Every structure is written in C-alpha cells, then in structure tokens.
Length: 329
Image: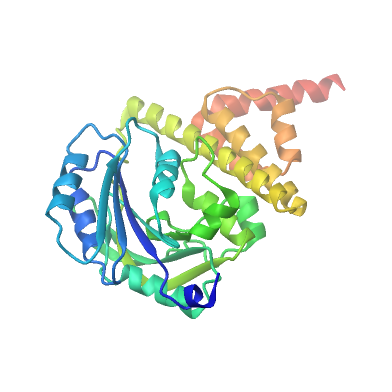
C-alpha cells in the first residue's frame, strides 16, 4: 500500500442482507441511508425472498438521492447466509464491509464510529463489533447489551467453545477475506467463523457504544406441546450440526496458518457437537460412541444435559448397557 492510500479514509461498503423481511426492511434500509460517514457504497442484497422484500429494496434505492452510492441485487435462488455473504463480497469495493441484517436498524453514526476506532488503532483489527440495543419484534428497545456476550475473546477459548461476536454488530476487512477466501459451503454462523479467522490474524476491535438496534425473537417462536417439543429437538440438532461445521472450518483455517497446537481443542469441540447432534436426533449412542466423544474432550455435563432434554430412557439404556458390560468383565 503506498503512502497516499495508507493515509486516505478507507473505502467502506455497507451491506444490508435480507431474506423474507418485508415487515422490517424499510427501517433497515433507512438506517443504511442515514449513515453519516461520507460517501459509502451501500449494497441492498436479497436472498431470493418470496415476499415483497426485494421490491421494497428496489423502490427505496430508486428514490434515494443522498450522498451514498446505492446498488441493489437479488440472488437467483435462495443461497443461505454464508453463500449470500460470499456473493456480496464478490461485488463489494470497500476496504471495510459493515454488515446489517434486514430486520435490524443501524444508528446514523455506526460506520463513522467503527472507522474512527479502526483508524485510531492503525487498522490492525480484521473484525470490528460494538455494543447494541436489544429490540423486540415490535421495535421496543430492551436496553444496552454487549457485542461480546462472553467477554474478551481469546483464541484458545474460541477454538474450544466456538464463541463469536454478536453478528448484528459486525464489520470485517477485505484483508480478512483475501487471506481466507469465501465462507465454506454450509456456513450459517458466519460470526463464529469470522471471529476465529480474525483472531488468527489482526484481532478484534470492540467499540463499547451501542451502534445497532438488534431485533431479537423474530421467527423463533415455538409451539407448546408435542409439536413444539419436536421442533425444539430439530432446532437443537441443527445447532449442534452448525457447531460441528464451524469447528471443522476452524480446524482447516488453523492448519492453513500452521496452528496445529489448536487441533486438540478443535477436535474436542467437534466430538462434543457430533455427539450432541446424535442424541438430539433421538438415536441412542453406543457406549463406544459415547466414551469416544468423552475421551476426545467432549464435556460430559453438556452431553448429559442433552440426554436429559431429549429422552430420559436413552440415559437409562446407556446405564443398563454399562452395567451389562461391567458384569461381563
């Protein structure tokens, strides 16, 4: 990078990524348009919604007459979160990409504050995040919360437990993308993947100021009774699979950067997630599968809780198998 480029303000892309969010997308776009950082590129991107999300995007882009450059696009098919982000990164021109979901609202100073803190620290960090205001489905503010829900993030802790920054507040560098490439197929929790990648490189910058109104609880309602229990079990199975996927991605990233020392932590996380997914599916793991997972470093307490959440008979059957095995020895 030459001297002039280094001391110029960074190019910034502000991306609003949406899917089936017609009820909220206008507020999200208004937040993007209101950014008070000069001349940013705004990309409004829809993941092939079947409702009016993209139509509203296009209408607002066509009416916009402010200082920012506004582009809108729509995927030809529903890609999912990771692939959707990849498609936006292919056309974004910014040195820094500030991400926003189609149901959240960015405060006007969000981009300016993130860039100011990034510049003040020499642009070292590759992932930026901030505090936020929680917001209900109806738009009622619920107080200030941290974008680092488990506190400061250490590489080893993230490797073992898969913690990530709050995705609603994140921004990342083009440098991070150039080093690791696209998010792997099947990625849903991009915040966990990007958190680990950033810690392998330039680190994370946290701005302790609410810069986003993060809408929570949308589309997460689960019925009571048997239908609710089945849906909850399916959701927990998906979460366990996502955790295993993220850990495998992290393992590949660690190997690429020569961090074999992190493999025992990552392997333990994979074993735990796979075992919990097995239990959530309603399948009774064999003693071999259960103890192999524990030996690999899976936390026995989490596995036990998963067993108790699904079907107590599973735990009972495992106890009977253990007793028969012990009696035969």
